[in-house]
Length: 349
Image 1 (cartoon, helix red, strand yellow):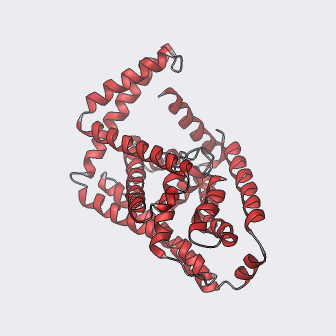
Image 2: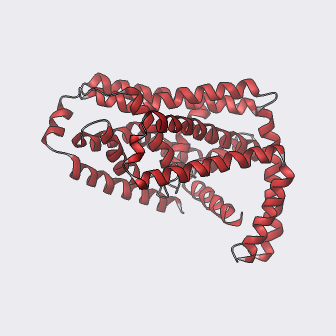
Image 3: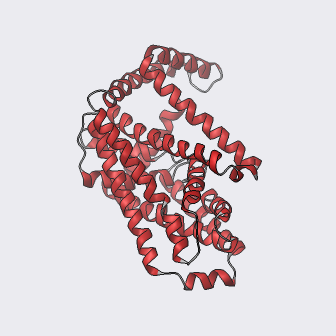
């Protein structure tokens, strides 16, 4: 997907979904609540978002130190915003990593280490969100019981994340077995016509090289860089806590009561599924799905507005800042090329 197409799709789907959500959920009561909103809570919500960016930048620095590299705070903040932008314009939020890896490479960090750092950051977040989702099943099982679709999506995503962690651990313990598996998959893809015969050797060599690179760098997290790795995990908890506190703060702004613990559990479940929505940046699903799932916490005539406000604070602001960073660090042409190369490598693998 090109940069222009990704931006147009994200904006188009987002604006359409925002309009539909407001049309079907807003009534006179909604307007009254909005006019009575307390500004101090809105400022508090923005402060939580800024704090989440700081935690995110600090954990990036910690994971980089665990891999034996140093990344400055200012660059880490830019990488945080860049990840939001890249994730927003690509399906299943997969574009943030390639942008970060390229910027790290331009700042003297090898591609293998860049992959290890960004992949660890993503996997740690998914693991933590998954753990909170497991708590959701225990303490709020009624959230899933009302929809067979949500239940099915949840179990699909849970299986995917579990398989990813299994493959990561296998690649660390038995890298040769993973290389053989990569060869088998590549040959199968050749047989079905996805990988061209002339590309088989290139793909296998690329897989072996990348497995060696990230295996070597991942091991640093559990040896010389273990203390920084643990610090990164703690900072990840802080980052998620700040983001998940935004919705309760917005609800308090309009004077409604909310159960804080249940709000966190519901957001964790929603975030967990959003990682795997095929639209750019989960646009459309995030707004409409948020309006639906937040209705477990607040009246339906406010859930749509809250879903959009939640997205504005937790995503839209950072996406806008990330767009500015992308144009400054990369330029329009280079950003488009990175997305093209990432898609090409994904198809070859």
